[in-house]
Structures are given as C-alpha cells and as structure tokens.
Image (cartoon, rainbow, N blue to C red):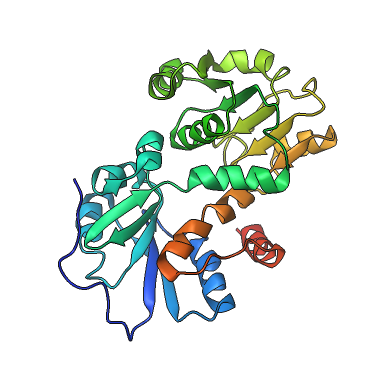
Length: 289
C-alpha cells in the first residue's frame, strides 16, 4: 500500500534534504558520499542519518515529507518493510528489498539501486566481464543475492548457481527468477567455482568480526572475475587470493558508491560521478573503523 504525506514537500527557499534510515544508522557511509557530492556541485542541500526502530519505521516514512525530506535511503533492517509500505517498482519487488525512496507527487515510491550499483561496479572494475559469460556462482541467498541475481539475468547470464547453507533459501530464488537459477548446497560451491566465469560473495563471511570465507579459487579459470560485496575490510581474503592469481576483482566499496548515484540524481537533480577522490575519502574513513 502506498503512503504519502498531505503537506507540501518543503518550502522552496529551504535546502532540499534526504537521509539514510536504519537501526542502527551510525555505521552508514551514505552521509559522507552524498554530502561530498552536494559540496562538489555547490548544491544547497543536506543529507542526514536517522536511527529509527523497526516498530517506528512505518510512521516515520509516512511522515517523511512533513519531516522535511524529499527522499531517503533505506538500510538494515528496514529494506523489506519499505517494499510493502510504498509504491515499489519492479526492481524493488524482484529483490524483495528497497534502498531508495522518493516522491512522485504525494506518493512515496521505492526502488532498489543495489542492482545497478553491482553492475556498474563490475563494468568499472572489470570492463567486458559479461561478454560471453555463461555461468556464474553466487554465494548466499539473502537480499543482496537477489539483487545480484536480478542484475546477472538482466545481463544475459544463462546459468547462475546459488550456493547457500540453507538450501531452501536458494530454491526460493529459483522460484522467484526461474530456470536461470541453479540452487546448490554450500558444500557444492567447491566443485562449481572452478568452471564459472564470475564468483560473487554476497554473504558476511570475510567481513570484519565474522568468520573467514573458505572457498578455494586455486583452480578457477584464468579469465574469471571475482566480486565481494563486503567492504570492511576493503581487501577481503577472497579478493586477496584472487589478485594473487592474477584474476580481475571488484570490491564492495565500488558497489556502495555506484548504488548512490541514482538516488542523488533523483533528489538533487544532478548526476554525480564516482571519482577517485570520493573513493579515497570513503576508504580513509573505513580504515578508521
């Protein structure tokens, strides 16, 4: 059901404002990204963090405009709830999660830009990665995996193996996306990794404070690409092993930056660029965490 305010978005004389909504919200780097772009383009705008508990989320976004916001990013644990509470587009529905909100008149709309963020990051880090790509292996079957699978199907990948510890969750992606998805148990990943042209880690394994990801890529094809959605640390064990083999890689920071482009353009009217300077800024902040 769509929700929308009855009051005007904001007086034109005041800066446009957007925010990231999460619980907690302190970990988000979105304010660094968007405020950097606001300053770069000389836009009189603001981007803030809003820590909102799950039981308060519906009421908060129902009054988003009255709070002075023209839109918002959504992070954990609210991404799934945002789909049900807004007019969600095909991408948000397919991913089962929304990360961007904006207004169409009085109606609050939602999309998922993780999909294009994932694809744009690969296009930048490994140009031509999808040329002739027939098979990919995705580790994990959560919301991020849904976005990745959606993007791979969009790029014409014929077979996408989804390996997950709980096999039923991998089968849920098969039910959602069709025969292009091949569910697999976690133990099957070791055998599958050798033959695919793309490996994507969508789990938290390898993240700071989490167990290591133990997948042997020693016999992976020499032309394969390895992507890891984890960005703390930026150089995960998986990416380090891939670089040691001379494989092309795409890190999680690139996806974080590219997924922010369309929201900024939607709210502030300028399409920003993911520059080396912005990457360096966020990388330095991550290094302190």
